[in-house]
Length: 203
Image (cartoon, rainbow, N blue to C red; front, side):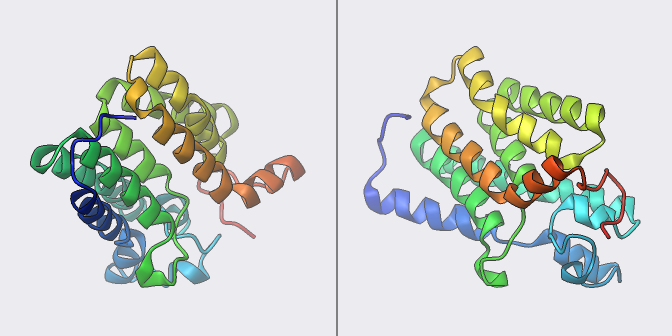
């Protein structure tokens, strides 16, 4: 854990700011703005980039990926610039939670992978890039997005150790557990061999 320097009131404010940033459902906003339909009625019903890709619009999917990642990065960087490292890490974590459980959508959000990657890129770019590489390897070998996410989450704590950012290991472990929890249905389908491939419409 980072050294706690901010007041409890200050940390609470940054947790709220991060959560609200993370709660912005960019996938749904873009899908509606680009007349792609209601994501809840498409594919897995998820609001993330993988499900946006199932609409067939690669631009919308790419923008969703960038903006969802940007939420985690923006929350952390704002906290770092205006408060300190403790507030930054908390704000980034809260953005991840906000994406997974957004108040605007009845706490039914996405899997948090893009926000998770954006959080680590902003926190320590070597860690973030290593997590992105882990996702790419997992996804490339299996052509399954959720497998890439699980590989990235599984290795994230290892990368924190490798790049000597032990101050974030506790947060990293919690984020990893939440990524696995959000992918629990995907894990069942992976075991059953029924998980859709990248770009494939879920039946």
